[in-house]
Amino acid sequence: MNLKLAEIAKEEAMKFYHGNIMGSDSNLYIISEDFCNNDFTVDMLENCWCTVFVYYCIKRAGYKLCIKPSGVKRSLGEVGIWEQWSKLKEVNLWESDIKKPEIGDIVLFNNVFDGNNPDHIGIVVNFSSDFIETAEGNFNNVSAIVRRSYSCIRGYVRFSEIREFNSHRQKC
Image (spheres, rainbow, N blue to C red):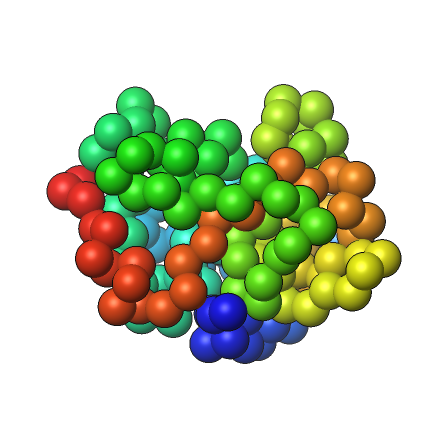
């Protein structure tokens, strides 16, 4: 279990990060610094920032994770790249048993956002035999703690502790 990551994710989800909603300008610049460059701006995140939230929480928990790790063609700004990267032989962090989450797992969802599977991502903060609770970015364009059924889960990226994860670290 990764209790530190889960606690940080809960804390960050409750800070009400949001895109442009209800007449309020986006405050996503706070969490998107690592993703923003000349080709990618905060405005481009509108309704598409769940991965940015997860990456920000991971970084706050002390993990060193490349935005574009070796072995994949695109960045972790895309949900599907998390699965591709975690399944690489040299990384091996993918868990596909959807009924066996652990606190602090990164969970990938199918058919939650746009139907391109996987299409959404969050961090497991609680679960029971009937539901999973996650800290997420971009839940209706805000950060939130969300309860979902297991039926939409694709799988998990699981790293239990920083020492173990950093031993899997790849070149960027």
